Amino acid sequence: MRPVRAQIREQGYAILEGLLDREETAALRAEIEALIAELDPPGFFAASTVQVSETVAVTSTGLAISRLLDARPALAPRVLEPRLIDAMRETLGPDVRLELAGAVASDRRRPFFSWHTHIDGEEEGQRVQRGEWPARPRTERVLTLLYLDDLDDETGPLYVHPRREGEPTAPPHPLDEEVWPGMIELRPRAGDLVALEQCTWHAARSLRRPGLRLLVGCYFAAAGAPEPPWLDRSLAGRISP
Image 1 (cartoon, rainbow, N blue to C red):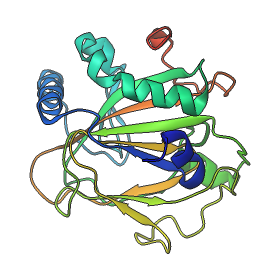
Image 2 (image 1 turned 90 degrees about the horizontal axis):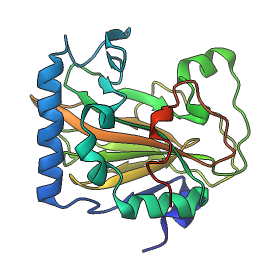
Image 3 (image 1 turned 60 degrees about the vertical axis):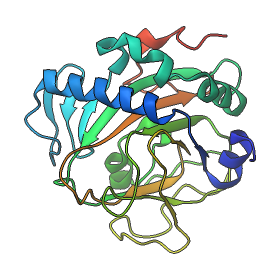
Image 4 (image 1 turned 180 degrees about the horizontal axis):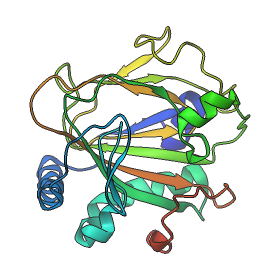
């Protein structure tokens, strides 16, 4: 298999299959489900953000837990698995910065999650309103999605529009159209991780079964990348060599 660094630069995404085995994945899922039960959120989707606490909110993405390792420090070895950290160092440099480590839970109330990127960690809607699509000639930030469910027709596959490093960042098609020409449909299994370069357009289909779709998400950035306002400085040193 090609190195993660090469995959990201050539197509804008990479897959680390079996980052966690089934037993590890089930244990991680159980811990996050227990945390959600403690939080007792008012729901798992909101068109306008509903703040549950300083670090937890119900959003259009789902229930967003932005400081997972503060709430569950013992999960660090699974969330920051060495194979993942090695791949991020190879992709972003030896001084790679861990910016955020969180979890997202969504249910079937969440509609099609329309096409978006994570350029500079900025909310997509703000950039759409300005109509500004900055050039990003080098890979500077990567979002990782560790899935705790098998993605299939019921749980909703991930859609990705491949992009080579340095290509334009503007959307190639309307953001609310579900099917884009040239898109790739990804169906990772529970325990697989998808790494997305910040400029890569992606979307997600809705959950069609009862229950929750869970994932753990992290942002990694090159040392010289601009710091986003939501940077979790408490993570400094978590992935030091």
